[in-house]
Image (cartoon, rainbow, N blue to C red; front, side):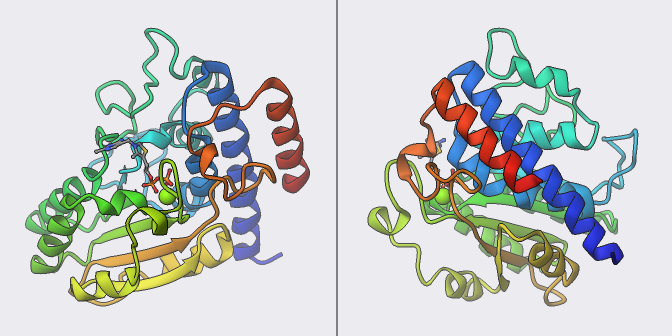
Length: 278
Ligand SMILES: Cc1ncc(C[n+]2csc(CCOP(=O)(O)OP(=O)(O)O)c2C)c(N)n1
Ligand SMILES: [Mg+2]
């Protein structure tokens, strides 16, 4: 097995655990957003295991790469990812969205070490990311900033203001990853506000764009390894994903944006995820 194959195997196993834990958290609390947790799991696992520069034992090291979970409604997947890399205790995940828990439905940097920005109101992560990337440039520091947005989230105009600023400041240390699962709250994105031609829209804002199969860790690894795509330009990765990925009856179904699985549905989902992981 090559070192890349070994990395991909580790990411796949981690993504499966992120999915299983996210679903258990949503089921236990009766709250959350399982569809978007499942679509983003491979992106999160790839970033945290193989892409982000992190210092073991020091999650707040000044030279760390910053990751901002702009689709903050999928906080469950973020917490499960932080548990994968030892920043959160796995036992803490059981408190998700219960009274007095620090693990809120939207991530809070003042409550959870490793959360870089308070998000949840859609359209805030990229503007914050632009500020981080600009700060790094001003400091002549080499850490990078990554922002994960939803695709429906891009209907918020603040993203496009931030996109303009990023290219104006030539922030080639900034990468936005769009979880392009084609579903938002209540319906498919194209039935709500058409997002296309999405890649050309980013290019028109002077970003360098790549499209990738966003549930394929090998493809993701290769794509991230090519960053920055062009010197002097911010990078956009359109990650084509499936909402509800990994669970047959949740896949590509708008209602699983925030539906809560029954006991039987959770058991079936975990069985399917376990089978895939093995
Ligand atoms: C400003 C704002 N408006 C509405 C909401 C409620 N809301 C939460 S998730 C969501 C849909 C997000 O869809 P998308 O960005 O495609 O996320 P994903 O498919 O990855 O879950 C909405 C409208 C919100 N969190 N913030
Ligand atoms: Mg979506």
